[in-house]
Length: 239
Ligand code: ADE
Image (cartoon, rainbow, N blue to C red; front, side):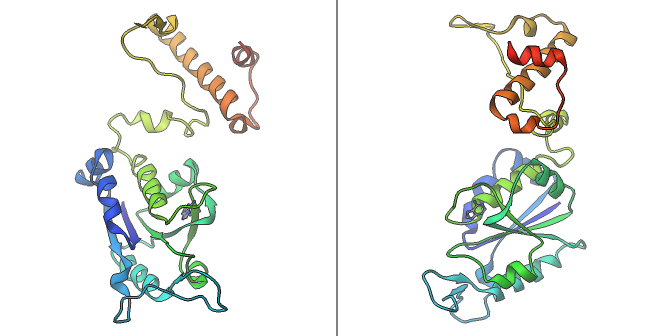
């Protein structure tokens, strides 16, 4: 998969793309990250990327020209029609389902805005998706682009050492994850549940399922809407 980022602050990405699992995923060829400063695509000698809004008012607006030209140039870098994703607070709220959808693509272009916003023609005639990473306003789209790049890359087949971890983690199963413990079994009098020490695999699987369900019920009941619980599941949740 190819992930392009268009940003006025490309230096922000070196830490994220150059560390840990994302670094490994790109070194092993599962993903190719390319960060481009769209100021390079301006057609004016002052390299201006923004201008005053028509009709007046405070703040500046990102011009359509450098963004259209940059996206058109980067779209030719793969043989696939890319998804062109605009990061903005007005976009559709990002979630695991959207990450799974993007992970099926061969090429995505992430567009990071700043200032008051984008010229509306970018939204209307260029982008395929508008995405917000949450109901708060950031200084720019870069953190959102990092969130998307990270959550999509970890879903690519072969990126996580243990393939199962992307399938069983929170949200992919529709439930939050069950608690985890490691050695020692007794830490300052805080003990690990007996079932996990029992070596009885069926009981352990059952414990994990019920604890996932209980945690989801307590913290994110909205995720259980439309799901019918068995009598045993209800009993566990209420215990
Ligand atoms: N740019 C500014 N705020 C944002 C948000 N919440 N999500 C995505 N991009 C943004």
